[in-house]
Image (cartoon, rainbow, N blue to C red; front, side, top):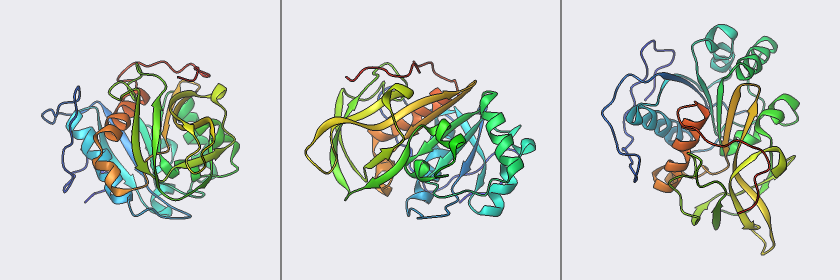
Amino acid sequence: MFRRWLGGGIVVAGVAAVCWPGHPARALRAPAKRALVLTQTAGFRHSSIPVAAAQVASMGEISGGWQVTARADTAAEVAEAITARRLKDVDLVFFVNTTGNLAFTPEGKKAFYDWVGAGGAVVGIHSASDTFHGDPDYLNLVRGEFMTHGAQVKVTVYNQDPRHPACRYLRASFEIYDEIYEFKNWSRDRVHMLLSMKKHPQRDLEGDFPVAWTNRVGQGRMFYTSLGHREDIYDNTTYLAHLQGGVEWALGLKPGDDTPGNPIR
């Protein structure tokens, strides 16, 4: 389905174009932004990874906003991809359901965080928060760490910033069925909240439970959504509107507030 390190992009097959109000499909054109997709897993490997990675590439091609120019699935490919030389050719690094400690060399790790601080865009889906546990640099970037989850469940999610590209086409609240994460080392006052729940996903307890947010590190932008476990969620138009808007914000294609500590809505 994919070829790696193509000079002119990647051809994607087998993924249907999904559209929603405000995001009509457009003729393919040469996109300005270039994306690297990481799918390496040093822990649990989600069966949805091929679907997620294909949809990410398809959305970028259809919208014209970005093009996946490289994908790294294995430790060797990640080590090759995360270098100062490779990152010069990338605008976005996409963590697609990665888990565990990825194969960043010491030099590659420094190059990555230098690249982020200089304006690189980072997007994480679902288990991107189950990646690099205990690494203070990664936690400073993602600002939340997977702790646990219960059975897959339908939850009510609340839109925390209706003007943000990641939330603009979403209702004030909506229901979605997925594997819902609980987090540690997370605080609303350290992120800009996009989506949250008012009840615990497993227990009928009221509170403030995060689902998606943004963060800034230097000039770099990070968008994270904890949704994305199931294959069928990549056909869900609400989720795809959320995901595309988040990518567009991270790449600086669409403006959106990123002030930490926005109030509960």
